[in-house]
Length: 498
Image 1 (cartoon, rainbow, N blue to C red):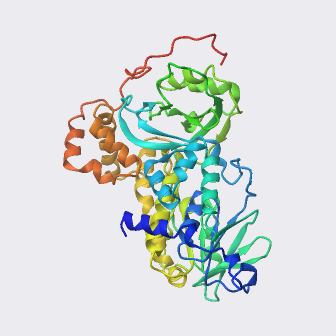
Image 2 (cartoon, rainbow, N blue to C red):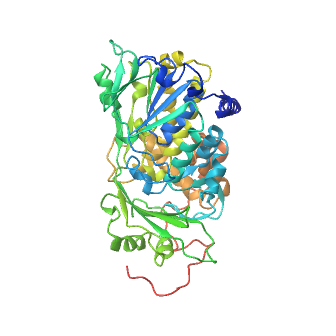
Image 3 (cartoon, rainbow, N blue to C red):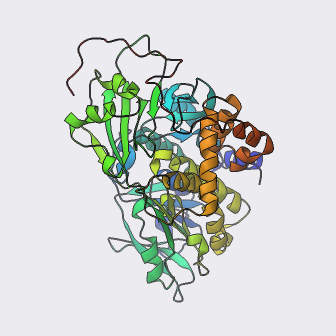
């Protein structure tokens, strides 16, 4: 199915083509027997992966129920415990923006109206790569907003489809299955309720209990591949100070193996900056408020520190340490029950520093849409093993990006790099150095990083010649405090004490 067909199918099955289940006499949920599951799909988890899956499943299932452990606010964007990483930097790459807009037409405009921004990277940023400063070139677009705003807006748009409902404050405790365990027939909730369904989708993220649930119904748990660079986050909100001379929208100072410390500053709705400091191993950023600025000052460039040293903090620092790459290989299992899928971070999660999680969730939803577009609910359930494999493949490229880069750091735990990975790392060092000075290489590099272009883009003959012509450039040179296209700020007022 090509993109145009996907686009047409998603649009023509929107809310305006459907009738509310409660409006059809005799077909209301409360009128159905408990065991009637043929037209019902259950999605576990109301994060981005779960919401997009629910939107796609509503194309083929008359009823889709999303089960969410947290109580969901009806009063707009608020923090919830089920997404602890939401207080840290999130980016939605251009590919993710495109796919979510296709599934939920008009949502980009609603996010922008609520205060989100679309920026060009690296043009709108002060971006210090491991090699050098990027010039003011256009690479890829990113949508920046708080995770709370993103989730709240997506949830509101998904719920415009009358086939979808959300039950918040409910927790799944296990799968229901037939006597032989070959078919999942629903889900068991913690309060004892048994919810029948033709299809159950686990999108509960990092806390997924799917391996144990599969074992309980007689299936093996998946093999797991894990790489942990021991990256730590600490984030804090600041009020954006007025500065008519500011020529950038965000700051990104990357670390590298000789100084594994970095930081990112991004604008959010509500006239706020979200500043996230990062570091590997013993360089993990502190949590104490009085140590936040000194850590920012220790980065490879003072640009981020200079931006926030006189800004007004709006929150205490918040830490996040659960950043390992982990792939649960459900796609490799020879035995797989009909009627069950695992999507999003529940199956494969990445070091969040690369910003791929939300875009991968959108790619998985797109893959799901393509697989089910001609199937009725019964055939979708019967095709679960194939669908699981197809939706898992979208993780391959971001997994390669995240793990090969993390393996540059000596503290990283995981399988050692093979010869192919070491060659790729060397070549990507040349790509990065070349992207700092060559607009063509930069455009292709950001095309791959944003998951808009395939990795082969960087390996075609023309690109390889351009990259190899720049291999004399140092991969880790001494760099200036600021890029040539941006002057250091003049001293304004007394500095706050660190």
